[in-house]
Amino acid sequence: MARKRHKPEEIVAKLQVDVLTSQGQSVPDAIRSIGVSEVTYYRWRQEYGGLKSGQVKRLKDLETENARLRKAVSDLTLDKLILQEAARGNF
Image 1: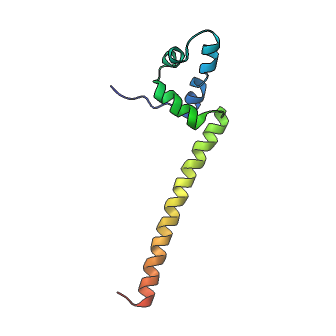
Image 2: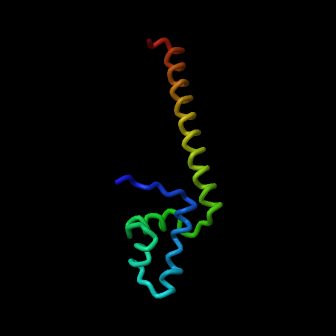
Image 3: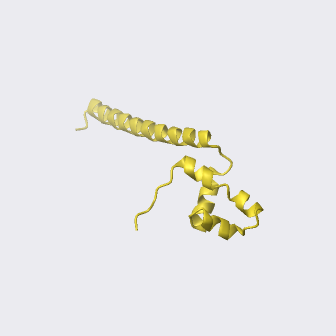
């Protein structure tokens, strides 16, 4: 069975389990009604709890940018080390 990838905005919308529990459902039943396992719900709550949709999108954009910049820095560091070794004449 193929796994569904939820978008961050969908995750934030599904984290509104408190509404269902206030209507009388137990927490496990409310979690099942949104279509995820308890483990997934608690993992999402730990990562996205307290964030709004706009904030989640910004967080994901920043994480993507951070990964891109880390890769660029590592490439430049490697180039620098190669040039330093070549300048010393240890080849």
